[in-house]
Amino acid sequence: MGALDTSVLVRYLCRDDPRQAAAAQRLVEEALARGDTLYVPVTVTLELEWVMRARFGIDKPGFLQLLSTLLSTTELVFESEPAVEGALRLYETTRADFADCLHAALAFVAGRTPLRTFDRVASRIAGARAVPG
Image (cartoon, rainbow, N blue to C red):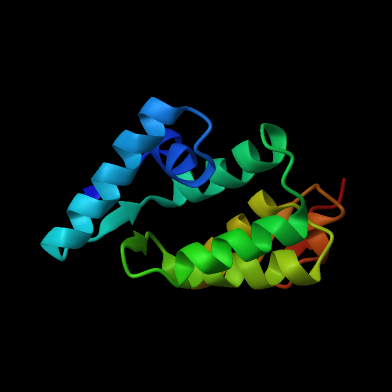
């Protein structure tokens, strides 16, 4: 099993560079043909949200749908998948940004709550607490 960098995953999804998109497509197809999966590090998941929002203008509902779809594919295996799924639920139901939702979900899965933050919006996430100051 190999792992994917954000750039490969973005090319596979967005096809904004035809040459790289074709290479990413081949990589996924070859993995599927071997019955293999491709690993998505949690840092790639975090960066994917940022790239999709900042570079491609995807909105919150669009990213929720995209990540839900990716989580349900058989060819991708996500690091800390329970935390990524938890972050997706938090992101759907709060005003906090995806990064803060992922931080809180990772802390929860690790049994290290609450997540302490100075960010007022993030402090309202289940499992997070504001640091006075």
